[in-house]
Structure formats: C-alpha cells, structure tokens
Image 1 (tube, rainbow, N blue to C red):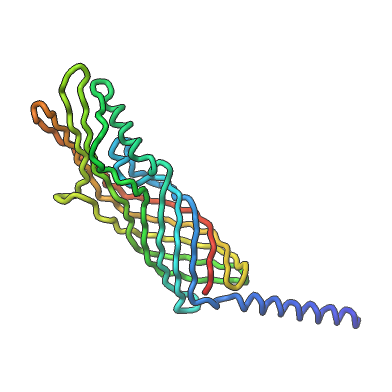
Image 2: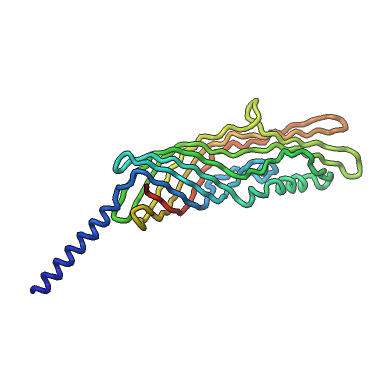
Amino acid sequence: MKKTLLSFLFFVQTFFLFAQDYDSLRYKSECQIRTSVGLCLPLTRLQKGTATDYLLEFDDRTFSWQISLAYFFHKHWGVEGNFQINTSKNMSKRSDKFFQVVQNEYSQDYYLIPPTLPYFKEINAIKKLSLGIIYRLEVRRFVFYPKFSIGITSFRSNQERIHLKQKNTNNVLKLDYLPTQGKNRGFKDPFMLATSALLGYKLKKWLFLNVDILLSHYKTNKNFTKTTTDLNTMQTTSEDIPYKKHIFNLTLGTGLIIAI
C-alpha cells in the first residue's frame, strides 16, 4: 500500500512538472521571425503559350522563399508583415525561350536577325509584400496560426525588338513588343488578398518547426502591343495581347520560427 501511494505521488509530481514545462512555452513570445521555403502552385494560369509569356517576369509554377515578422499585442492576436520571392528555372531562361518561340513562328519564311539592343532585363523574380492580422492558438508544444492579409504582387515586364529577314529576298520585318496599360507603358502592381494557416511544433522555447499553406488571389491588368513594320514599305500593323485574369495560387511551405 505504501509503495502504491509513493508511486502515485511520484506520478502526480512528474505530471505537474511536465505540465508546468509545457505551460512555460505557451503565449510567451511577443515577437517572432519566421522563414520558410516551399512550392507555389497555380489554381488558375496567366500564361498563354505565346512569345510574350517570356517577356513577363513570371511563371505559373514557382519555388517560394519568404520571411515574416510578427508582433503579438495580445495573448491571441497579432500583426504580421511578410515578404515573399518566387522564382523558377523557366524564368531564368526567359530570353532564350522568347527568341525560340518567335523563330518557330516565322521560321518558314524568315530568318531571325540577332538583336543588338539590350532590352531584355534578367531579374526573374515575383515579389509579394503583405501585412495581415494573425490569431495564435497554442496547446502544449503545438501551435496553430491562421492569418488573413492584404498586399501587392509585383513582377516586371520587358520590351523587345526583333528583325526578321525574308528568305530569298531583301525584305526585312521589324517586330516591336511593348508592355502597355491604357495610355501608359508599364504595369501597375496588382492588389492581393491572402489567407493562410500554420501548424507548428515547439522544439525549444525560442525555436519552432512549422508547415504552412497559403491561398492568394490577385487580378492582373496587363497588355502587350505587338507592332509589325515592313521596313521596305514602312507599313505597320498592331496587335494587342492582353493578360487580364483572376490569378489564384496555392503555396505549400515549411520552415522555422524564432521567438524573440
């Protein structure tokens, strides 16, 4: 009987020690830094399969890296700023792919003359900046953070000029691809809405391991004007190539949280 009572008291003491240890991990940090890597998958696609796809600093499927800073002004509520960069192998080869598509389009009747003007800017990254409200729920070593945020998505565009020489003649065509939006060249960064959820496990009081899922939406309002000029007759024709679409992306990631 005495041994049973001592064993019970030892168990109770051990339980409360662990409970206190878990409780010491809960809702203690006011500031957190989070970094993660992942994959951004398209639920809707912007690219059309045309040459102008490669004048956009964009790809539908990308590798994602992000860093966030959160401040909790309440036990459960906080604000978080997030910066995300998306890139891909296709984006790093945009210049070669652009000329290849144009060459395939005109190869039956024309030779492509290599360009001499350095229009193509190889930056190759989609940037996303957001600010949101975050809710914190912690149970023992596990954390769950749903979040809603607003922000902008930014990706640049290129202009390009190509000359084509007609086979067996001296006729030359000039092709100009210019990004336009209304009466102004260039694109405005689209407004973005995003919602996400994070599930984490506390390795230490100051270090968490986490996985997260993010759904984002923005509407592009982009357009290219392709102008074809016959340099012999100086006759021109123009074609608008729109990129106006609701874009939905799903990002899956994993990373670390450092509590300050």
